[in-house]
Length: 383
Image 1 (tube, helix red, strand yellow):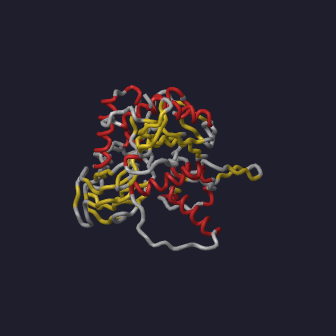
Image 2 (image 1 turned 45 degrees about the vertical axis):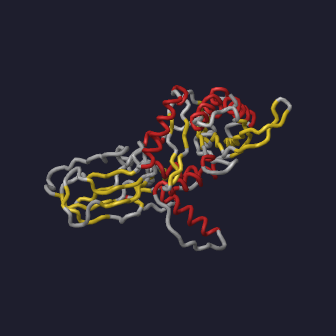
Image 3 (image 1 turned 120 degrees about the vertical axis):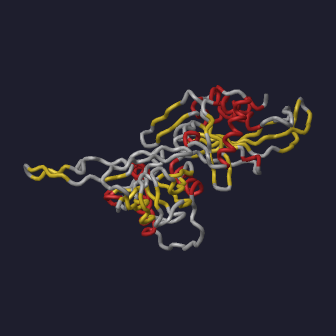
């Protein structure tokens, strides 16, 4: 018997959700044959078989969340004397890495008793779990591991937090409902973390867009305005580490473009946007919309955001308090335009007004920097 553990499906992801089994218990499979479709926070990935053999057990059902490194499938292997070659998941956009474990099982916590040196076992912690524990100020020694060989997973840290919260809460309301899955589940986790971490402040203003033709590509125009504002006030095109109080200003302007889908929010990244023409920006937007719809978007296209744009006004709403997702420090949101009376040259006339909302992380950005950025956006849009 051989147990195949869920490999890292890319960029150190801590877990993946079973979307569809391609095989069942009793089936005979070959190396590289697709076994299961797994959904991560970034993409849907087909996991191929690392062995030739018979399926003995499936360690999960559809919609179950499997931790990286946890048992996925048990095989009865053909030719057990040979060493099977681990195959990497194919298709869509990830690379399988190895589970990070320390080779030294006694690497932490040396204890000196008299003249005798003893050692205590090291905690085995997934990198994502260690980061989460640091962010939430959780003592990993108090967390019960559930991963293979005593490995602490992000789910263990979350379970500890939930348990601690329940113990300190006088009453708990039982809410029956459908569990979140895939992208929507990840969105919930990211938004909760952002709310806890960021010192968010929102400033709003309007810009008169009456001079624009009706067929103007507003999304491209907004992207150009963000680029101009980042060049005028670089402090908002940055990352901030709240733990070390470190700020990194970026030369490249990588704009995350929020795209709404029935499955949840995607934010593909337009890399080095300042070097793209209007035509190239539009082509990139259209390509991202298509790849997001069919879930073929590459994981690399969802990484590296330095500032975010949300054009929610294509649906409804005027102003908003958009959420800054660390490590970025700013997001510009555009609401629905409307006709309002405006004064030009001392006379009242009808103008087309576009509402803007800029949220920034006040830990890293001053009010002056934020308002100068917004003024640069307005100047660019005003023509």
